[in-house]
Amino acid sequence: MSAKTASVRSLLPGLDDLRDARASELRVIWAEVFGEAAPQSLSGRLMRLALAWAAQAASRGGEDPASRRAWSAAERRRRAGASAKEAMDGVVAGSAPAGTRLLKYWGGETHEVVVTTDGALWNGHAYGSLSAVARAMTGTRRNGLRFFGLREERTP
Image 1: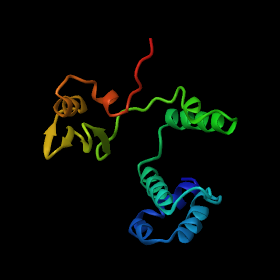
Image 2: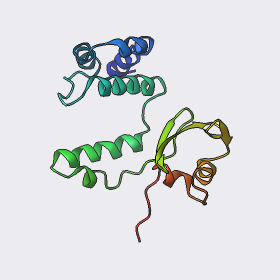
Image 3: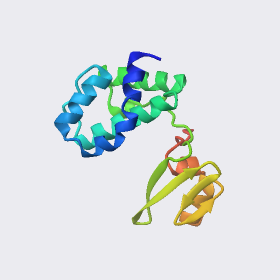
Image 4: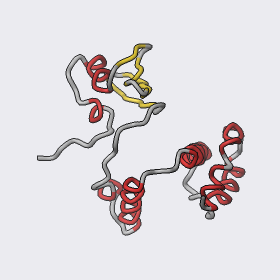
């Protein structure tokens, strides 16, 4: 285990403490965990989310190599001056693991869907797939991954 992974994993027992930490305290934690100062543009809320995600990802072995390469390429393109949209070319989101909470604005309201090992939960009902949730939500057949933004639309 690398020193960085060990440092990130050390956050796991203190995730509740992140919730109550001030932005200045989060910046100190960020520097200890990532070995560099947090970007000045990050709010306390975003630092909290990023630190919690990093701790949870480290506890599960981190990102898969393909995702890591795709995001690194997007970061390089962005640093080279590409717009955010241009930098994301070629980055394709995959399926969401169980426990993922998806938010979808549809029909004038925000809907929350929780991905489970057997499908998804929405409005207190269990569904066998995200496509089934999308169908129930919209009344029409839809590709669930595409509807929830987990798969890009195909271009002709």
